[in-house]
Each structure stands twice: as structure tokens, then as C-alpha cells.
Image 1 (cartoon, protein in one colour):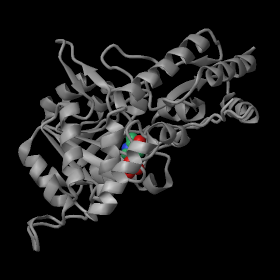
Image 2 (cartoon, rainbow, N blue to C red):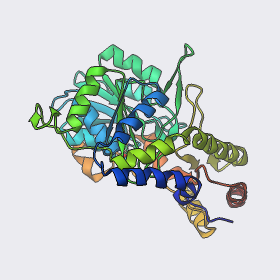
Image 3 (cartoon, helix red, strand yellow):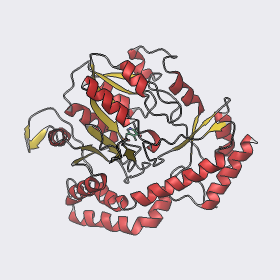
Image 4 (cartoon, rainbow, N blue to C red):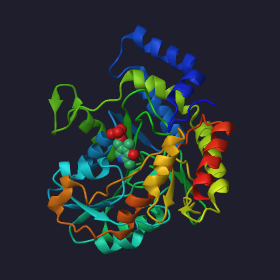
Length: 375
Ligand SMILES: *Cc1c(COP(=O)(O)O)cnc(C)c1O
């Protein structure tokens, strides 16, 4: 049996390596490493795929969040509501810009931001909400849009884990994750569903003036070279990475389908286990399974992880610490018990290997091993 990995980038390279090599070679020969034609080409392809008006590329997913926030013209002390259960980048950029992160608890079944909690957290200083489409399933956008409208708030979707996920509105319309709020952001970090061979990211928006603003901010606050209208940053998608992304984008739908097949297999294998809960699937969203994350009950998560490791099955804890318990954010003055759901998740969640290159033999082995633990 091929060794089991959380993400098997080597197997992926074996499949499409020829195409990637050619794309890289073309850039090397052109020597247009910064802002080569492949960057605009990829932006256009992604725009088409997502059905969004503007795609603005940048250096990584964290920069994408930062530039999105900078473009909204918020003032020091303005409050930004976000989930207490996410990767640190979501909260970090808020704090970095002198804004106040306001954390809220999550839904115990789908791990996404809780609509009730968001509603309760709104104050006269609230200016924006950053929902994260965690593990590949959309946050409840329709309800969040309603709150945003009521209180005149911006929504930035952190779609780093949900490239290709569809949001299904009650009226039957469908939009891609990241194209629903005022701005969407994503990351092409190597482990993401659409990834490059290094760092990369984009901002997405249907608003032309926001798109212009973000393009300028990412380029030192400049639209005409050497004339700088505002304080910006230097954040670019490398031409090499853009060329690689154009190759990989062609495989995204196939890869997301393969991930869903793995998730369906796990669901069927683990549904009856008493000591663990399989991930909830919501009617309003498809699921692209950036992670397949179970909840392990009765304090057995760490012991299960060790048992799997001994059987050469990797697993990960996304995430072991909530935002409000991070040392860096202790200045916000939260109490340990403020967010019972996300705090419980940190002790119970376990993400199992899921990627498009998994084979039947690996899946059968993982299922049999895990079932044996719970016997
Ligand atoms: C990966 C990730 C990011 C950051 O992306 P980078 O490209 O590593 O900066 C932000 N938010 C979430 C939810 C992520 O998973």
C-alpha cells in the first residue's frame, strides 16, 4: 500500500507533472517573473470559473484578507466580527490594522460561525463580518447577508478552504464561495484544494471600485508607477505560481469530486460509531472537504490520534486552540469559558487524511483501523 498522507502532493505531481514542467519552463524562458502575462491569464480563468466580476491576485491568503480590510477604509477601533474557530490569519489581519477583532462562537455540527452569536455581537462600532467557510462548507451566508444589510456592515468571506464550493440560496440561485459578500479572499497554499507550489492568493469582488482599490493597495498604493496615492503593500502572485495555477485549475472540479467520494466513503464507514460524530452536511452548501473532521467523544481524541499514528495513519487537530485563548489576543480580555462550543471542539476534533489521490486500499485500511478502535 502506498503510504498514507494528509495531502499527497507528490502523487498529484506524478499525475500532472509534465504539464506543470512545461508551464514553468515557459516562464523561465520568458524571464517575466513579476507580472508576466500568465498572471492576468490565470486571473481571467478564475474569474470565469467563479462567475465573479473581478479577481485581484496577491502574495498569499493572509495578504488577501489584509488588503480586503484595508480597501474598506475602516478606522482604528472599528469592530470586526469573526469566528472563534479558524486559522489565525483571519483574526491576525484585523488586529494588525488596529481594528478590534470580536470573536463569536460556532455551530456545534458544522463548525461554522453561529448566526445567533453574530447578531448578539453587533454594536454601534461594528463595521464588518468575516465568516470563514471552514473545512470546505459555506458559512450560513444568507442569514449573515441579512444581518449585514440590517446594520450596514461589510462582509469579507474567507474562502481559503472552500475553493469551488457552491452556496445554494433559498430562491434557487447558486453562487461560488467567495463571490457572495462584498469581498472574498482565498489562498493557494500547497495544502488547499486549489494550490500552487509556494504561496499565492486572490481577492474576489463584484464591485469595480473595490477591485481598483485592492489592486492599487497590493501595488504600493499606486496605479501609475512611482506615484503613490496611499500607503499600500507589496503583494504579488509570482508569474511561476500563476502558470502552475492555470494548470491545476483545470483539475479542480475533478479533485473536489474525488474529495467528496472519500468523504462519502468515510460517512458510510463511520456513521454508526457511537464514540464519534461525522461532519454535518448543510442543505444550503455543497462541501468540497478541504478537511474531513470528526468529533471524538469521551475524551478519547488524543488516544485515537496516537492509535492511528501507530498504524501509520496521519491525522491532524484543526484547531487545538481557539482565537480567544491565544496568548496574542489575551489583551482583548475574553474569559476561558466565553465560547463553550469552540472550546469543546478544540478538545474533540480530528481531521482524517483526505485528498484526490487516495485509493480504495488506503480507505479500506483507514476505515477498518478506526472501526477497530471503537469496538
Ligand atoms: C490557509 C488559510 C489562510 C491563509 O492563507 P495563507 O496563504 O497561508 O496566508 C487564511 N484563512 C484560512 C481559513 C486558511 O485556512
